[in-house]
Image (cartoon, rainbow, N blue to C red):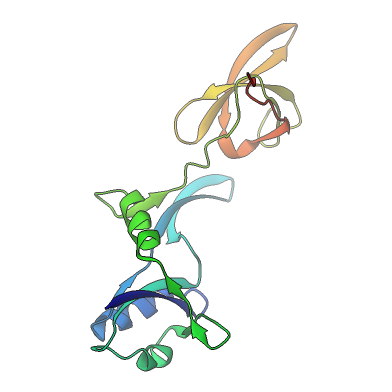
Length: 175
């Protein structure tokens, strides 16, 4: 019987642990995500683990032992609750794998704005820092359109998604 276990890695050692577990012929999975980070005022994309310090290991019980995993390079331990190892349901790992990009295998967190048109927002970065406006719509994966009142007129302004924060949520109408 095959079961998925949750493995806790040493800091920033997910890739190292994965490499060594694969060498030992274990089936392991580290879901990775594309993250947009801001460094020196510029936006960069970097690839990192979706769950920092964790990876999934599928063990073929009866044919593979779990004991060597804890001494594998990069592994800090096997997650357990009390005396029992944590078993991750198959559907959880399969769902993660299914949601990954089919070409790259990476996840993209579309934090999406989760904002509805009409939501009050405040811009917190850039030339419009501190101004309040109204969320109009998303404009791609990492930009939004905010309506700002400038010189007595409402003007649409394109700003980075991470430069906008909700000041008041707008709920959809209930029937």
